[in-house]
Amino acid sequence: MAYFVLKFVPHRLDFPANLTDAESAVMTDHFAYWRRNADAGVAIVYGPVGDPTGVWGLAVVEVATEADAQVLRADDPVIRGDLGQFHIYPMLDAVVR
Image 1: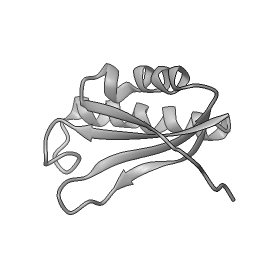
Image 2 (image 1 turned 120 degrees about the horizontal axis):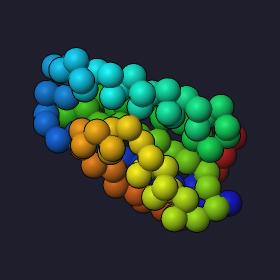
Image 3 (image 1 turned 90 degrees about the vertical axis):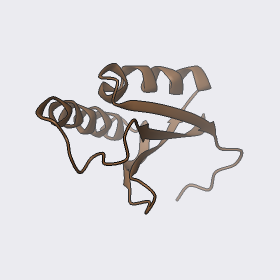
Image 4 (image 1 turned 135 degrees about the vertical axis):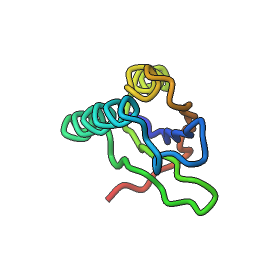
């Protein structure tokens, strides 16, 4: 198995402070999606990062291949809802508790 970091970068800087109703619904689906992945043992950690330059999302996942990480990205409601983009980075080494 391999570990990957998925970084979600929203399209606008005031996200998620000023969500529309439609965006709020997508975010509800997004958190449920990652909760399911965490419950399945795929997502090690996920959630918003309070970067002072703008909030972004983080997921660290354990999957067999980068292609599997790309599937996770493609299936995420925030990608399907076009709220931003995900960048995928392989972890070169990982110490896991």
